[in-house]
Length: 264
Image (cartoon, rainbow, N blue to C red; front, side):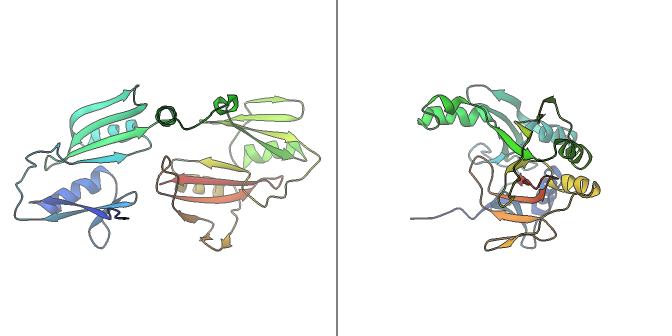
């Protein structure tokens, strides 16, 4: 039987006050029905006359907020003067960051940032993942360029990226996570599919920067996938990444198709 939880009701004696706190604390606005959307789950803060002003057993039900940068969010919440039940800490055994705070009604919220170590440990615990030597390897993208110097200029002027290292016929770019290489090639990319995907934390800022540098975004209109002003909303995602994604595509000077996305 498929019975998904569609939303969570957070009862309060002062719902307007509590809702305003959540909107300020997490930089969001309730929708027209009063729901605050945390990923794919809506939280409705509503008034009831059968609840006390403060939660009697706040640890009985805890809202777990899975975030991409727990330290940045904890710093923001510190600035709002929140009450910490357990301050942010990294738990090596879990491979994750945890912190617990109380909202104005005393309800407990837990911030959780699952790192790459968490997913590695989970794969090992469940017996998933690599079974051979390649399973422990790193991944690096290779993009062909008919004109390596033209590609170097494009990545520097249009994307703001400088090669970390170079060798005859190749440029190496190291990013926050992972790397990619542009290599001199007599072949030409067909650019009919995404050859490299980049994950970012703030898509809007990246869009503004790249458009300011003159990067032209691709328009896509295929069944189930349509861009609006160059941006696409993708429903669904891998569980370790989120519940959905926003993104865009562009071609570099060599015709390689590159996708940029923000998991949500």
